Amino acid sequence: MIDEMNRGTTEVYTGLKRIGVDMVASLPCVNLRELLTLIDSDKGIKHVPISREEEGIGICAGAFMGGMKPAILMQNSGLGNSINALASLDLLYGIPVLMILSHRGVEGEEVSAQVPMGNLTGPFLRAMGIPTYRPIIGKAADAIREGWERAIAEHTPVAILLDISFWRSV
Amino acid sequence: MKRIDAIEAVAREGTGSLIICNLGYPARELFHVADRAENFYMLGSMGLASSIGLGLALACKDKRVIAIDGDGSILMNLGSLSTIASQEPDNYLLVVMDNGVYGSTGCQPSAASGKTNLSEVAKAAGIGNVREASSARELRDYARKMRAGVLVVKVEVGNADVPLIDLEPNEILERFTRAARASRSS
Image 1 (cartoon, rainbow over the protein chains, first blue to last red):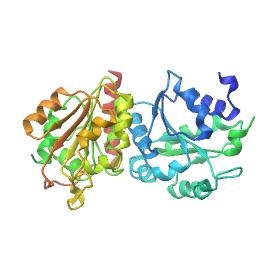
Image 2: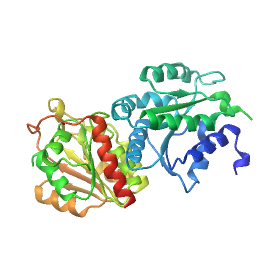
Image 3: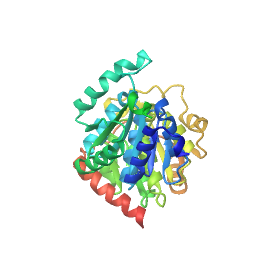
Image 4: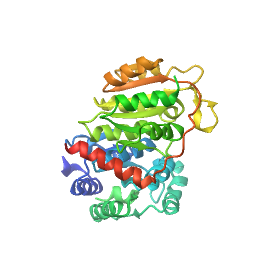
């Protein structure tokens, strides 16, 4: 099955498995669809489809406190829905979370409505002091490992931003 | 029933459980009546008590997890009820303290206070076991017997005169995480 996946999907999935992610909270993006299919069929990962991204930040915090290694998969638009939770839950207490973000509204975007949040995603993350990785194809699994190590060491959320070209790589 | 008495009853019946408690006066009241390492006091992220509790329940399957939420807070995150229903944890009790107001900010009425029936909302979201408690006796009974589901507790408007929580956020996290993980590996 994995042979049919695009390179980006394979790399992110490999990265998540290598660090031992055992729970994923997700809200779909079209660029995450193959990854979500993989995760949903992986018995080693508890998949929790959510109704709003902020909810996933709460679920990941609870799962982390209980000893799991959670990640949240979402579109960058969901970052906007998660800001208060990231600040007054994760940053306040020092709770790590790995955020895998499909970054829309950047080069190659076909939907103009994605552009404002696409432009604001980097500034929001910087303003919040959230370590952010923007790996090119071939580097995502390493970025995920490095990001998670930093999340644990620095007690912080981290963002892996994966732009449109990343998902189109073949 | 005063909310502080309801919280104390839940804490007493939940002695062996991990408790996530909503921010503001509810957390202060729980801290005052029954502080222990197995309590996680929210200080922010209003609306996420039910979500934090769900994540914890999925991680700590051998332990009952109780989240103490409020009517105003659950309104901010109604989708959480569908998520809980879809995950069907058998160790997760969500307790909604329903006084119809935002108690910690001056008791302004919540949008749920007039026409919304939160028990029916929970049922319609697909939660299998939903109960409502209006008396201390009913509350004790349900809090003892219900391992999972949603319990809506009708409480009076008003906050107890209790001090602020005398713990730093990282202290709350560290001692709670230790207690939760100990229960997971045992």
